[in-house]
Amino acid sequence: QVQLVESGGGLVQPGGSLKLSCAASGIIFSIFTMAWYRQAPGKQRELVAAITSGGSTNYADSMKGRFTISRDNAKKTVWLQMNSLKPEDTAVYYCNAERRGLGLSVYWGQGTQVTVSS
Image 1 (cartoon, rainbow, N blue to C red):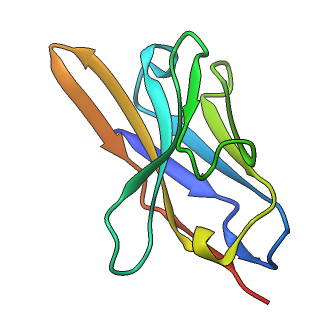
Image 2: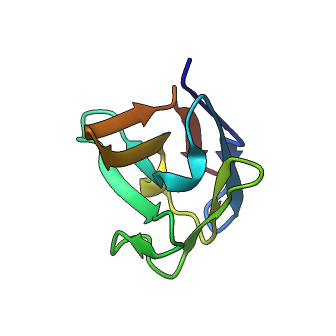
């Protein structure tokens, strides 16, 4: 059974920081591209950051310079360090695992709520 379990969400003030974690099981973690997406109420789900199996990263423009994605294959965990948080960062954040093998395999976590408010 594939599981992606997010943790670390919560309430934070504008300008604050938060670190999200995603622990994976049931997949060969090291060969998957891992990513964080987010979805605010009434909005489409959008990519926040991604990190490939080789360690290459990319970020959405609005997150660039503020967010950092990292992974540890031995721990089968991916993190999202979020700094200088803004109210518009408020969303449910989802962990994503993806690989192209025999077709595309995509898995999602259940999401963790991040609320940026004073």
